[in-house]
Image 1 (tube, rainbow, N blue to C red):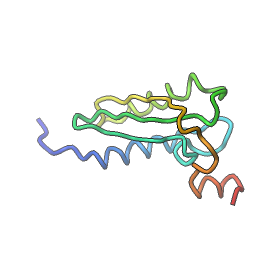
Image 2: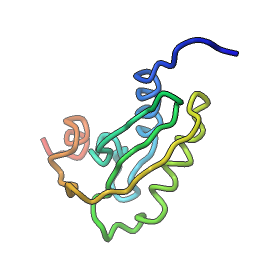
Image 3: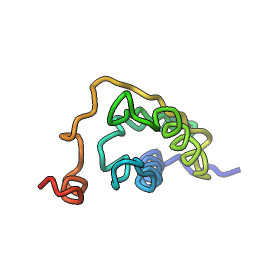
Image 4: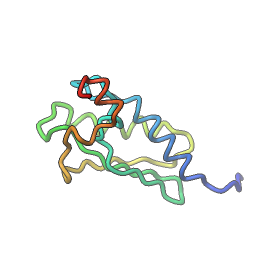
Length: 108
């Protein structure tokens, strides 16, 4: 049995790394840099909960993207489980994008 304490920050970073590999199909930038991820929590038992939104409630991947994110996060060996909650408040706006995303999209 591994008695090493859980490094929740390292696990959070790993969650971010995985989310940086997932792209909005309409915008060539990953969902994390787009600012679609509002919150990442990792509890004492290594369960991750992610609150994210979409660029629009009418987004064509509204059904599939959260499922894809959850599936990919559940491949992280160190996580016991991962759940994704889709939220609409506050609404997503382009101001939520990172500088790198804005640069990549020619918005700077």
